[in-house]
Amino acid sequence: MNARQIAESSTLAVIARISMIVTPALFSILASIAWYWLVSIQSDVNAAQTDISVLRERTSVVENNQVRGRAAREDWQRQTTEQIREMTAQFRELNASLSSLNTTVATLAAKLEAQEKRIDQRR
Figure 1 (cartoon, rainbow, N blue to C red):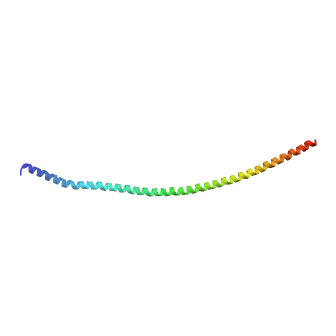
Figure 2: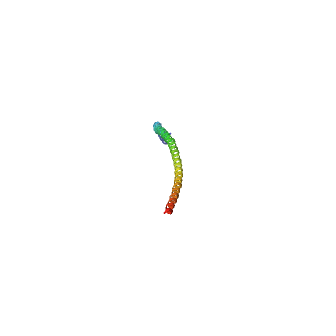
Figure 3: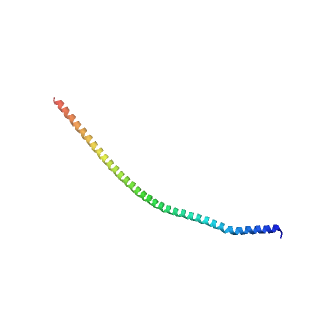
């Protein structure tokens, strides 16, 4: 063998030995990085699950408030409508009473005028 072939084969042997030493270390580093990445994803998933349960509870509270609020609005609307009906009926009664009162005043005014004429005629 010539010197060049020996040098190339010993260089190849050194590179092969170094790669045998470095390869498990690289795999260990890559495995550690992958492990930390998976752990961080799992913690994000756990946080999301916690948030989901909180959001479900809040949604339930909001829906219950909506149902109660809708019932309260409907009740208020019913009461207001009933009060308006009662007021309308009272206004109609007042209008009828006022018409009756106007008729009575007109009748009394006519009687008063008639009495004044009779008194004036006697004098």
